[in-house]
Length: 118
Image (tube, rainbow, N blue to C red; front, side):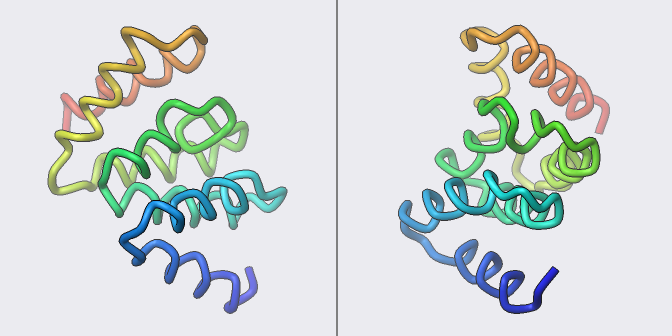
């Protein structure tokens, strides 16, 4: 991956505003490049706030639901490494209980199970 792209993604991850999250979601998680999606998902998880975590937990084709196993596992590992997992657990619970897509609900159940073991 291009160093400039890496720096841009990491810098957007440090911004406090929700516009940065929107840019990461629109451009990063929708990228054709697996590495860009992987880094974007990691950065969103590290923010550890509701708006960023929901992008990588509830959206089909993004984060834990990415079609690339590398991206999905990388996102899951970032969630497992969070020091404070309370917001992630809340979003996982909401996803399990309310999401319309069975596959997304099942992925959320799996990640929640992994969290309970960690």
